Length: 261
Image (cartoon, one colour):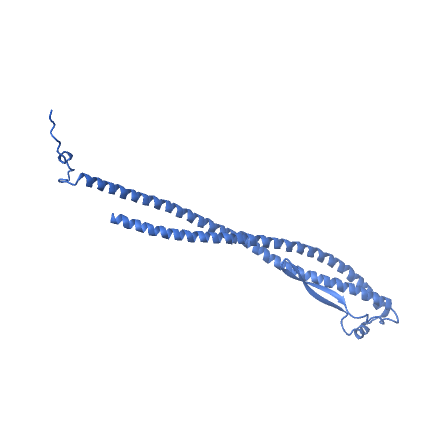
C-alpha cells in the first residue's frame, strides 16, 4: 500500500510537470503562428512593393529610350546650327565668354516617393535675360539665336535624361534588394517556420499520447489497489486460521444444531 501511494505521488508530480511543459509548448506554438502570419503579411507587402517598383522601372526604361532618341535628333540639329554660325560669323567663343558672367540655365532637384523609395527628379529653369541679344549684331545674329535655342533644348533633354538615368540606377538596386527579401521570406523563413510549427504539433501529439498512457497506468494501479483491498477485507471476514499454509476449514467455524425427527 505504501509503495503504491508513493508511486501515485510521483505520477502526480510528473503530471504537473507535463502540464506545465505542454502549456509552454502551446505558448510557443501560438508565438510561431503569429510569426508565420507576420511573415506572410511581410511577403505580401514586399511583393506588392516589388511589383510597383518594377512597373515604374519599365516606364522609366521606356522614357529613357525615348529621351535618347530625342537627344540624338536635338544634338544633330544643334551641331548643324553651330556649324552654320561658325561659317557665317566665324569664331565667337571670345564674345560668349565675355558676355556670360553666370549660368543662365540652372538645375534644381526634388525627391519623389515611389512605394517608399525616394527618387531624385531634376528640373531645369532659366534665370536672367538673354545675354546673347547683341552678339552677332553685325552678321549672323539670327543664326546665333537659333543655335542658342537649339542648345537650350538639348540641355533640357540632357537634364531629363540625367533624372531618368539616376532613377533607373536607384530603382534597379532597390528592386534587386526587394526581390532578394521576397525570395528569402518565401523560400527560407516561411518553410522554416512551417517546419517548426509541424514539429511543435508533433510534440503536442506525443504529449497527448503520453498523457493517455499515464492515465491508463494510474487507472490500472487504482484497480489493483481496489482489488487488493477487497481481497484483504474478504480474508479478514473469513478469518485467518490457516495451518501450514492450508486454507481454513469452513465446517469447523460453526456447529450445527442437532436435528430431532
